[in-house]
Image 1 (tube, rainbow, N blue to C red):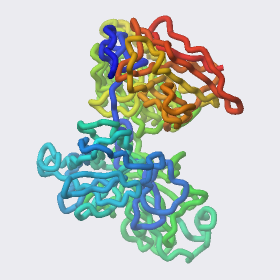
Image 2: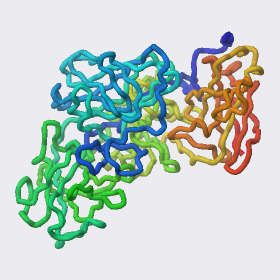
Image 3: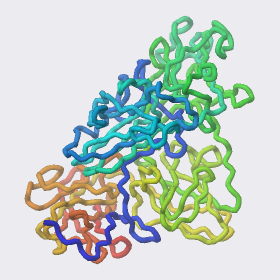
Length: 615
């Protein structure tokens, strides 16, 4: 029989409890990821594949260029369906800006699942073998409004006993759930159905932006007289019979380039092959928008032009036409993932609004470099944010929308980060503008996996941050940010003895723990001899950090003070507002050492959580 909830329990399930008006608040259970924080473009980096008919998606689990979409999530091994209850999964593709897709295009949601159209149920399938659910814009299958060019599927998944993660993307050309042409942009999406979920879970969808007005021209010189090609591709005049290019701006379809003075080619027969975007537009492609990145890969006689996993820029030129003729454009390589070459269209200059002051915020992940745009970090606080005007306004309810973080360079150089920032340095940031008409204090923290209106997962460490705007302020304000420390080599084990917990919690049957070292997610403890538990069924429930680390988690560093709170039968193990240490023990283990006990301490103020200090 479960215990009677202590009278001091106020129903909030979060620690470090995120606070509104500087009071602890609930950590919401967000399961969605946002792809490409901010305005997602159709031209984000896409994977590469030497076989023209296969998907060009990738995740960072790929270790070789073997073809196909990089669908399997190596952290997900089994289907955890065990009940007859169901969660509803919703996925959308928003084509309302261009409205080019219709029912004949066969849009479908492709992922690590298999779909049964007769029952509308999906089951986990790590092979990405399908069938896949089709998307609709006819007011059925979960679609909210017929004919609004927002394509939707609403499908069922049996409520899992343990969290179940799916990877996914999107395709067109599917027939009754068959495979099709990969149209997803960026790294694969991910959505998790949490244990016991019976509600609706919305996966981050694909938003297809409005077509722009900037044309793109690419050339590659395969002759002896031009710049030599990189590596083994430098074979000399007459060596290549087919020269093609594929890229994000045209759906990663291989397009044959010209050397016959047509379709934008300057001189016939000079072995400088040419591609012009406007000459190769299709039903679902358009010119580039301001700020867009257009990745591309050349394919020479069926082989991608890559050396050591990255496309060289030898022999390659790019040009952009914003209305005054083609002008040379810089070619860059993405530092991570596919390392594809890309061209970036200059963003329209941002003009700060009048009667405001700039406020800067940064999160430094340069030590571990685990965060990317799809992790959707956001600055959350007592404010709401307008992405169009970049204005932050006070909102004491912490109701949002919150502020996405970027790693795209300084706001005054086409990005969103504080002035002087460098794109791609793994220091995420943003500059916002706040009215300086009157003095106002703001509280804040940090979340990841933020998709409005969901609240995201709280990852801020310590008490809430705060900054104050004074009346008439004009000098930029630097709000205190967060530096994510380098992962260490010290493991941690936490235990709680069910027979020796405080009397209010006697008889508890469910034991979980949440803590700052793993972003405050509740983790089920074990008493079955697995995951570091020493003795099965002895009533001592165990959590070992190394057995529960995720993408953004690591072992402890010397001096680190991880906070934690146990959750017994869904109630925080606290008395009089402070975490209880009765029946609790903690141990640490250095890389080359043995487990040793450490003192469990309690904070004297703030959230009053329990913590240890790593030696």
